[in-house]
Structure formats: structure tokens, C-alpha cells
Length: 388
Image (cartoon, rainbow, N blue to C red; front, side, top):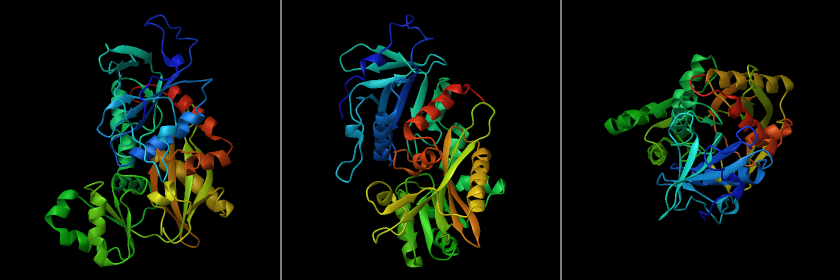
């Protein structure tokens, strides 16, 4: 990926000379990151760069390389697109750093063999990072220290909702339905593997084994036989030493998008969508089905009784508020006629390409993809910094 400078209009006038009342808000789009979802994040950034309203916002793309370096990258979506033939990654030599001074909001760049320079001031950060070191409260904490506004949930909600085990504790306390599960901590696994396997086996078969703090179905394995459980746990541990084992829930997988309300208005729920995995290669909605194959069918609105759809919307807003989420979230459910609803999880930075479920359900609800991006940025700009 080239590290040439972004479009010229992003470059601010000399410090102190810019007309702060008339200029367009500067949006720093931050993507990539150190997690296993680096390529997915790059692909999300490609979609946003194509669709963001350039008449309303100036854009600075900042990639976080897999080694953690922050890099100024080209305002060009093509190298960032994820396909079966191309796995994108952040490359470049020009370092980009946001000022840590509260309220300064300056973006400094450091190119090889050149003096540091101030590129612009940043009004809001749009973090498109998935997984640990981005979606889990770490980036949010950095931005909070700098009094910099950003899209999405704050530190606590981001961290707790990233940890699927802690998430279930919060939802249970709020009276929301969660399924049977077992948490296997790193020390427990290393101390007494047999006891961990016995605990997981007690859930019955089949089960889903997954990293507690990863997304996009990374490291998730469906286990139909107890003999395969140990290997599945080891696969999950490659992404996270903390593992969640969940009893398989019968039912349809349905999802609802939630957006924060403006001012003191309540959060809003989208129409309900449904995922159906077809074909023989995938038995559930795994990474390949989400991003690389065409075996996953997303339909919205889902074919549900009106009262069921309304209940999903109501409980999705309740889950959003119980978790203390801000900005956006996708709330995932299992529905079985005669059995009811079971809450699977909340994703505070859901897949965000135009074909992803979150933008799809909002498009069906009257908010197209470019308008959704604008809505999220405006919500962030409205939000005060500090404790809320």
C-alpha cells in the first residue's frame, strides 16, 4: 500500500490561521490493527472511503500496521479490498500520531529523513478496528485521554462487550435470556485440562467453541463429538487464551441494528434481518461464509411474525442500554418458534461493508450506507468528551 499523502484539502492551514467556524470537520478513519481481523478492518475501511460524504467531511486515513505502528496511508480504497485472491494489510513508512494533549486534536506526521510536521487537527475519529487492540476499549481509552471524540461505544462498554463471557454476565443481570455456557480461563486449562473438558462436555453436544475476545467467527469451531473438544479449544486458544464453550442453540439466527439517539432521545432499532448459510462447505456463519464465499444469504426484513420482530427490536434496545453502548451496535439473537428468543451477543463495531448485515438492515430501515456513515459521525460530534 502506498503511503502518499491524502487529498490536498485535508492539509490544514498554518496553525492558528484556519477558520475553525467554516471548515469541514476532519474525520480520521483508523483501521487495520494488531488483531487477527486486520484484513477485515482494511476491507471495511475501503468501503467507508468509497462512501463517506466528501462534501461534508475531510478525511485522513490512518492505518495501524500489524506490528502496532500508526501509518499515514493513501486515500485509496482499492489496495484495502479483501478478496479470495488478495488479503490487504497496512504498509507504509510515514508515521501518523494523534496528540495526547487533551483538546489539542493535532495530527502529526513523521516521514523518514524529514522534520515532523502538523498535518491537520482532527475533529472526530472513526475507528474501524475489529477485535482486540481496537474494538475492546484500548483505542477508546487512548482517545478519552486526549479528549478526542470518536464513533462508537466508550471504554467500559467496548471492553465488556468484546469479552463474550463478561457480556453474558451483564445480560443475565439485566434479565436478558442467555444460553448455557462454560468459560475456560488460561490458568484453568493449564492446571487441570481434564476438569475443563468435563465441564464443557456437561453442556451436551453439539457445542460451539470460540475465543472469548475475538470477532468475525475467528477461531470458532462447531464440535459434535466429545473426542473433538480438546482440539477445538486449542484452536480457539490460538486467538485468545480465554475460551468460551456454548451449548448449541436451536433456531434461526436473526440480527437487529441499534443506533444511539440524538441528545436525550432513546436508542433506535432497525428492521430485523436474518442470516441463512447455504451450501455444503459451511455449517454455520464462519469467517469464510461472511467475507469470502457466497454461501451466506442475508435477508431483511426477516420473515417473522410482527410481534416477534417487535420484541427483538425492543430487547435489542434494552441490551444496548444495559451494556452502556453508544453510537452503534449489532445485536444477534436465536429465534425458535415455540421456544422464544436467546441473546447471542452484541457487536460494538459490527461488519461495516455495504453487504454486511448492520448497514443492510439500516438501508432497509430507510438509512442508506453513506447516510449511515454521516449519522454515526454526527452522533460522535454531538457527544461531549469525558465522563458521560
